[in-house]
Image (cartoon, rainbow, N blue to C red; front, side, top):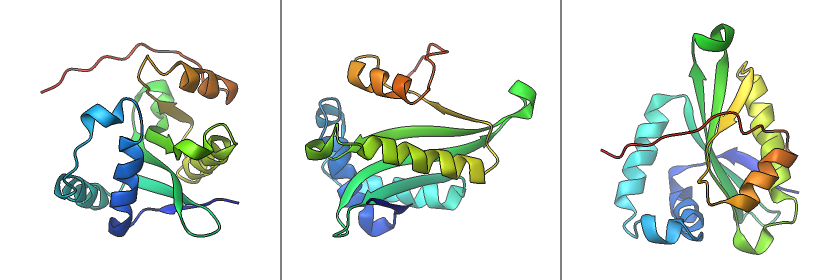
Length: 148
């Protein structure tokens, strides 16, 4: 069984390691943790932006995601849960950890009175696209980014 909980500052190195343990993350994540610790502190201060970690029975972090709760006016003033940075330890992928994680995502979104969960993913992640589709997510939008 996996226990999902809010990450602490002490969990940041393990979370960053999971972000790096990925074909895309290998080239974009930094080794210096100060940058990530400062970002974690900013997220904590925001109050609606959370890093969640999943621990196995031994207390080892094996999964992580970020969830941000966003209030809006569109879609009849829908409150949204935005999910990002979804990772499962590489040796456990395909073993149901992601399904457990998204049960946790949905429970947190419902507890925050969200009427929808939205997420983005890199278009090259075809396995992830199949996974999200199997969970009931619909590819409804095209996303854009502009780096500053």
